[in-house]
Length: 569
Image (cartoon, rainbow, N blue to C red; front, side, top):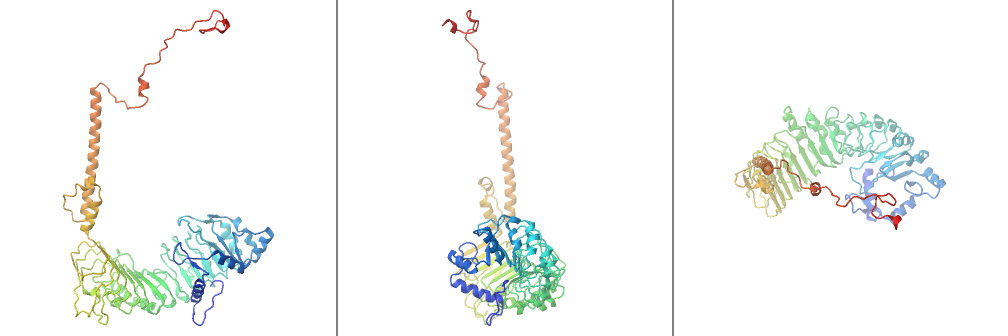
């Protein structure tokens, strides 16, 4: 796409769709093969096919690892090269790329990742390459510095007016230069996993041709600039941070969004009509939606506005995954369990502590996984969870395979008593495989229909948790707890800590007593100090060497001290 090879067709209006179609066709002809290593989305090329492709590409494509036959031929290749690729080294110095300063027609600068390399390993490139070489390549369309341990980009990068693809993912960049917003032909900007990135350029909205802005994994990015609504072609936007700059109603102009979207900071929305103007219903290609409010510690939030916002942020019926975090309203929207969400397969409701009831989800036809965590206001769960009120659908949770309830501290009773008059249903949880309950200490009454298909059942109550912890202790401590009635995990932990301290104190006491008795026995035997055993002790106690031979006398012939004189022999 960056090289301009993709053009919209009659059947596909977007360049990305044309690219996917071409790739699928090449893959079906074994031009690409799915890799056996790594993710499913990784593909490899057979060596013979690779040789053929390089032969067809001629000298337009140049690999830095290629060994030229001669220096003259090497320079000729560089002058004709349009696309450069190379295997990234641990330390890439300026000498490795100095020959490309004369290659003024270069369009692609693409370092390739090293497989079987630890993710924590850093790669470095000399500043001369970034600040001196790259700004000279005025015709660059593709520039990647992904994976290098670089801290910033030069302002001169704004002079690369033909640039369409910029990849600085997995770097240490904290902020981009403002000149990036002058790259008006830019189509793809990849910043994923830039964990130190704190802000985007103020005029990012000027990139009207931008189609993909990947900021996933940018944990320090706490605000985004105004004007994103001007990027009407934008398709990829993993997250949207609301706050001092960006407002929720700017989603209205982003009608082509695809894939996943996380809206963070919904507690900053002051007017619920902004949620209506966001118009999520018309974003048909949006498959995953995550709605996140602020911390639950803030009690000054307006719960009525939050309730209106979540009701007006109704997504498209093509949604497949929905996650709601830190919502402080008392009720979930009634439309959440509408059977028209025929593709919705995964729902997570996390830390919505003020909600007093669960939404009716039992008649979502494709729901496979339901996670409910930290909803502290719910005391009783009844038939409302099963979705009574949708008589046109008979089965209850027809596709659900995983059901999890975690940290619902006020939950006391779960009773599902359905009859033939309640929606004329046929089965309840017909495909449930995993059922997990944990952190629900007050849940004492569970009344459910028989679960015939279940494979994993774990109700991890406080008593069960306490028992498992007790059984995991070493015998020296566990034997003191067997005769004590302890019902909660906290009681077991407290008792175990006190027992462990008593055991350690007892060991120290007995050790001191043994040493004291040893010293008393030594004193009674007349030895003030107990000598340690050593291999050299015997040598120290032996008497010194005594010479038993008679001393030598001076020889009368030669005058020397010896027994036998050689002069007499």
